[in-house]
Length: 157
Image 1 (cartoon, rainbow, N blue to C red):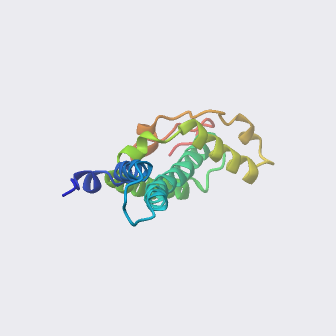
Image 2 (image 1 turned 135 degrees about the vertical axis):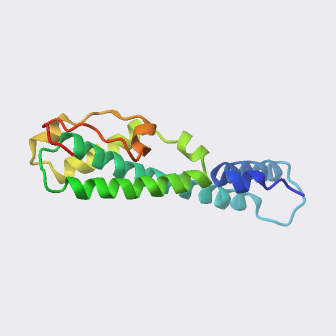
Image 3 (image 1 turned 135 degrees about the horizontal axis):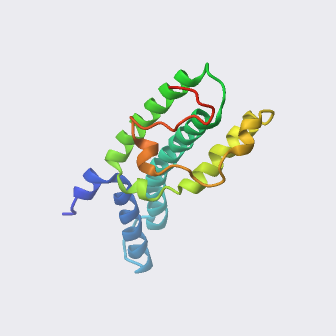
C-alpha cells in the first residue's frame, strides 16, 4: 500500500513524485495496461496548475506592492491594500496544501511580469519609469499580512 502522507501534506510535491514514478515505470516497459506517460503528464500538470495559481497571485501581490511603493496617487491605496490582503490569504491557504510550490517561485521573473503589466497600464505616468527590474521584496515580505513597503512620495498608509 502506498504511503499517502506526502499527498496529504504537500500536494505539489506528491504530483511531481508520482509523475516521476509513472515515467520510470513506463521506461521499464512494465507490462501494465495503462497510458503511463500521459498519466504522468496529467498528474504533473495538476501540480503545475497549483504552482501557476500561486504564481499568478504573487504577480498580483507584487504589482500592488509596487503601486503602493511607487505611485503618488492617494485614492486607490486602500483598495490596493485590501486586494493584497485577500491574495496573501489565498496564497497562504494554497501554500499550506503545497508548501514546496513556494520554493519554485522565481521572484525576479514574477516581478518582471508585474512590471510589464504596470508599464502597459500606466505607460503615460512617470512613476513607472522607476520600477525595479528584479524583485525588491523577499518572499516573507510578499506574504506577510503586516508588511507594507514605504511610499516613495511620503504618503502615509
